[in-house]
Length: 177
Image 1 (cartoon, helix red, strand yellow):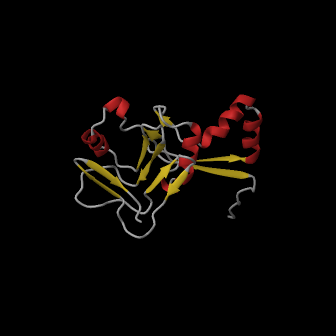
Image 2 (image 1 turned 135 degrees about the vertical axis):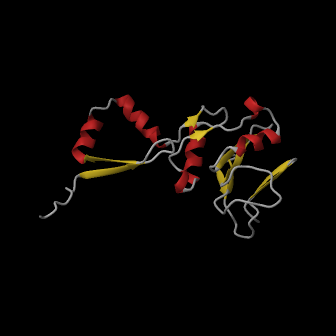
Image 3 (image 1 turned 90 degrees about the vertical axis):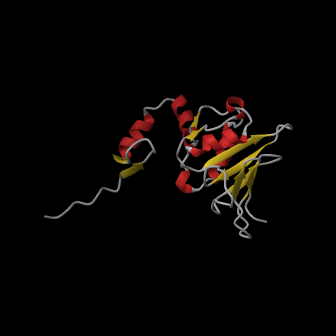
């Protein structure tokens, strides 16, 4: 018995989300085009923003432009996951202990967003949740960023491994150099 090859007009989509089992969906190119042609103008507009991460709940600090710029800088292994709020000074107060406590239940990277008294927006992507530690932790994927005056990312310099460190009175983030 001879096996048949897949036609050239087949698209294979692999989908995996943290709250569901992975699955594979196979559709023909014709079916994909048919589905797209039945979409309205408004649905096409929504498709453009489909690449943006879902913020749960909506961010009081980040606008779509910020989310888009940050999402492009994240490592591939974390792209496509929803961004869930774990700690907010508006909701949880300004206690560093509370930040550490809220981070303790996380097992994923953390995106820190800060807005200062001058309305400057900046922060960090941390490969590990924040915690008390007597040594530095994290990996070279950790980076700092700012939106002032323009979006800029400060990646690991390679000079040292001082990425993340936290104690009772401070939280340190860096990329060496």
